[in-house]
Amino acid sequence: MSAIDTAIPVEEKNKEVLVDESSISPTTERKNSLLHALAKRPEEKDLVDRNILHSGAPAIQQKQLELQKGLTTTALKKHLASRPTKEELQAAHILPENPNIAPALAAAQRELEKSMKEDALNSKLAARPSPEELVKKGVLSPEEDPTKA
Image (cartoon, rainbow, N blue to C red; front, top):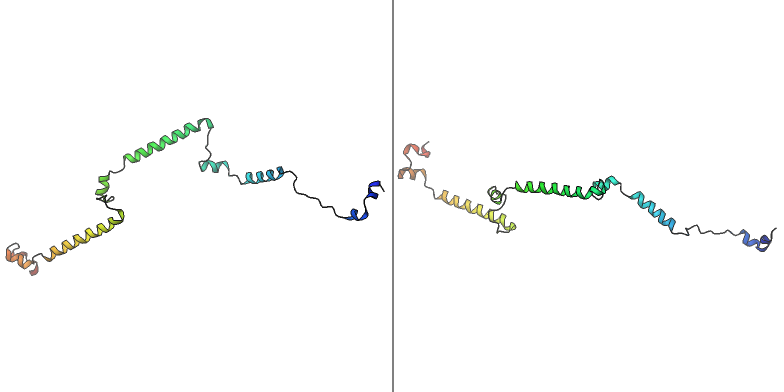
């Protein structure tokens, strides 16, 4: 037996030694979190599709963006030039004739105008002379009398 073996009592030799296996250095944890983040990172194609990452050489990216903006501007101007005028939209009953009325009231106004026209037509039809009266006044000839058909 060596001198070390004799210095340690037998009871302490039989005890289990607990070893802390946690990382001493936080770099291992950072490395693991970095690997996890890299695994979840989107692919380059996804970033290009979502317009986060631009394709092409960095030196020409600015020029490419300016050209794309110019194309969009030209297309927008073309569509705005072919847009119908306010008068054409009012004639097609897309825009209301009186823009001073609130949109919430416009439908009620149209219904009111329609019912007023309907009432006026009904009152004129009620006041219309009968065919017999028209024959008596000489407006219709007796042969044109619709009641004798």
